[in-house]
Image 1: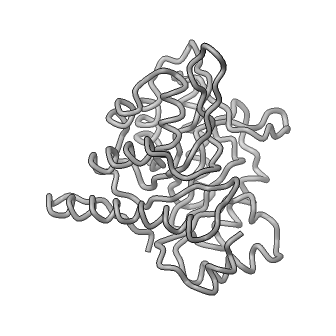
Image 2: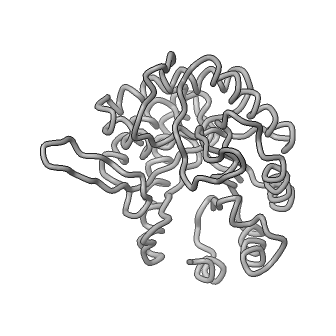
Length: 278
């Protein structure tokens, strides 16, 4: 939506992120504009359709298309969701949750290994926004992600908005989740807004819709993650009801200021993670 403004004004921004699936065609305007932007900025490629948590084999054609996107744009980061979205060749247009069991862990590890081998680089796995949980889960989500990273060598994408959404929906503490998260594996952070639905007499249900400014609770939790050492490239996700460019830029600049301040504090303490894709 704002590609022309970005190309014309060259804003002082560390990196941009695109959905891989939007660039799996061979050519056309999307590629032309992204090539111009990529010449001046670092890039992160974020997949939404690989279905890495599927109980079935990965779609080899989809993986090949992702491989071509990565080879074409050489992104600094490549990420996917801890979720599934396909079954028997059908795409379900949603990121669905997994039971956190040892069997699921083994399957997801195998899929991550397959993707990393195909791409020739490590990928990041994002914690999901969820609305239901499985009764037979034997591991906490943070334990599952930590073990996944340990076994495969993958990094993690900490979506702070997803933490707020999931924790609120399940009646648990988002602060406790961040405190238990394997921060040392975080290589990117997502920030976003969410919507709220209320039914009479029931607790609110939060929806991860990326359609509003970053919520105050997300900013607060972001600072908590930064204080724990998650000083990593941070992205504002705003996919629906996208505002005018100055509003979006202001959100990005707010994140950058917080990130820089915490990076300086960590540097002063003698420990800091890389906070730039460049």
